[in-house]
Length: 471
Ligand code: PEP
Ligand code: MN
Image (cartoon, rainbow, N blue to C red; front, side):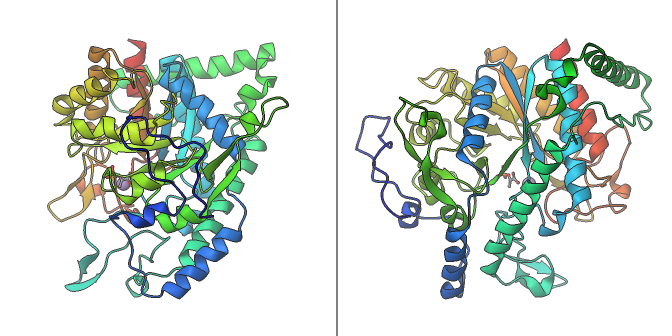
């Protein structure tokens, strides 16, 4: 596990040779958001257990996603990534998983119609259990208690807030069970387009919007019927889809334990020789959060050694000069599509900040190398007068629209969206055609972390993006 990997980690910036990397080399760096487990023996027992367990995802699947992401970076496909802010172990249920798969599928159909491109789907699911927090403690009912840090670390209930290392093993089990059902449901035709989809546009009151959405639905229904008539739907391309898994790679003890040196299947062909790589087998795609992307810190150190495609959150606190340094550290060989820059500024800041970030990257040796993805959620979180965390649909849409426009002006390609959403009828974000307002938030507010778009709001946002592409 801890043998330094000397095969493939040369520095791209031509300065000092890069120090040897290993799955545990992050431990010698300063680390943010790191849990202080009181019982180190129990932690060691849990990570030893994880190290014995099989990979959750396979390098073959990771390579497949990388091929897809290469197409996204080159403007040939669009990336849709979505799911909960904080996934709970309790969401590992048939209905919850199915409603999310169906929503992502439906959204991708709308995007295919709008952008006229293939859509690559990644769920924020099957492992999105660790949350960065602004403070390790919070006040509840006048009492100071440890903050909820995600099910992989502690529990939401007040008597469950102590860090428990056995949760690492539970996270593995819930992640594996979720992904197992995703794979089984997809292989059994949950994404089969012969099944009627419920587009439920009844809530859309604005006649112009309703006409627009109805046109898209008519087109999609006709297209599906037509494919069926000519037999084109028999191809596995249409009757089944891929859904890849992702989460924030925050808890490095967990990520390290699931990082394995394995053969890269792309080189395992006769005459190709073989090539060993380190794969983080906890998910197909992991990302570095906004609070942990310091260049000389532990998270960047861990991420620079894994072969998975990775994301980096980029926001108002990302200096332009850090961007290139991050790319050079994390992707010295300039693999196309290896890095997704997930931008999240806030509706009121995107126009001021995004152009310089685009120019820095696209004006460098990384031109055409990254995927630009818009996360219109995290820069638009606010609290109501009574202290409920929410987001306005209009702010979310406005950041997305501005981002699309800025990319168009700069001659770059916005290759994807990153959304917090759920297939359930929650009332956490205000606005949208349903007209949810602050008084409605208490009706069905179930998120334990950030507010998510509900099914109707998520579809509506997708229609609006599709509309942009069709203009
Ligand atoms: C998140 O994606 O849930 C998150 C915490 O985002 P960010 O790191 O961008 O704040
Ligand atoms: Mn969030």
